[in-house]
Image (cartoon, rainbow, N blue to C red; front, side, top):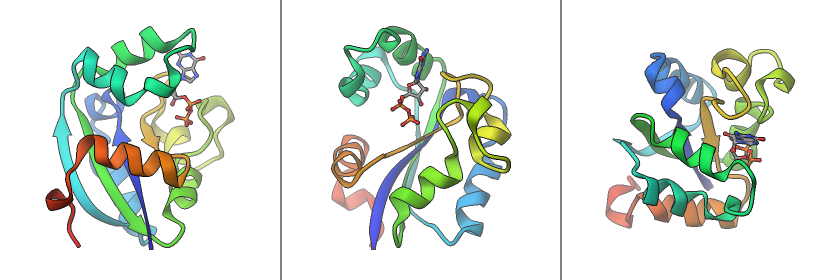
Length: 138
Ligand code: GDP
């Protein structure tokens, strides 16, 4: 059993897609074991995306993540890191496969609706960034 961190980004929250995104996880047999809505401030967004701090788009990306509330979830299931990445689709919605969350809901490379951890180490860091052990259902 594996866990991963999912974020419904400000663009998708603003556009009213929370329900459809959560329904997609549930229909695909992925369990939500923790969930909350938060409005990140710049420090919070910069800490979360610290691995990207050298990238030219770091400032734009962290500003975007602070534009409005996000929904943060811990997802659980077999092979859930890879399965969530598949459901999300390619980073750029122009390249995302039909039916993926980013194809359905993303509007640009940056405003791409969802985040999902990309490896067990990043999942552990990202889950711990938002949730303590008592906030995650067993
Ligand atoms: P992910 O793992 O698919 O989310 O993609 P990355 O780890 O490569 O990038 C992290 C996030 O940064 C993406 O989900 C986008 O929101 C954003 N991003 C990626 N590339 C670019 C870019 O070239 N410009 C901007 N403004 N944002 C980007």
